Length: 130
Image 1 (cartoon, rainbow, N blue to C red):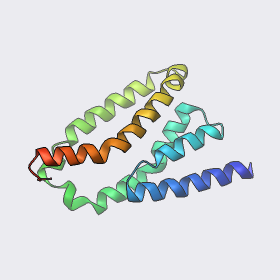
Image 2: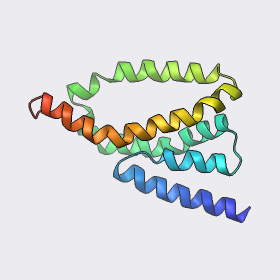
Image 3: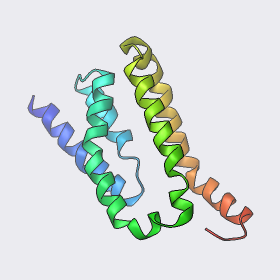
Image 4: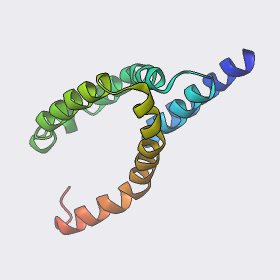
């Protein structure tokens, strides 16, 4: 039990550091929750709730950038995608979710890896404008 709690504490600290620098801390906390025996669907919900305060703080800290027209234009898409994802998750069996999780984590990892490259390409295509 002490080893599990220590692992979760360490994962939380590492994930917090990752989220503060570049994001992606869930790629540490989610597998750690699975490793200590939390079922995947519950680990996903726990992870989402755990990072919510950090996202709220980051949003507040970035409020000037978020209030720009370009940033506000993605809000409707984000809301629709969030509702669709929530409905999909609520209506998916544990077995299907467990089968998909490795691929979802892999996809998230790949997106984190290629994100800076994609950002440079988009910025270059946009004439250097952010």
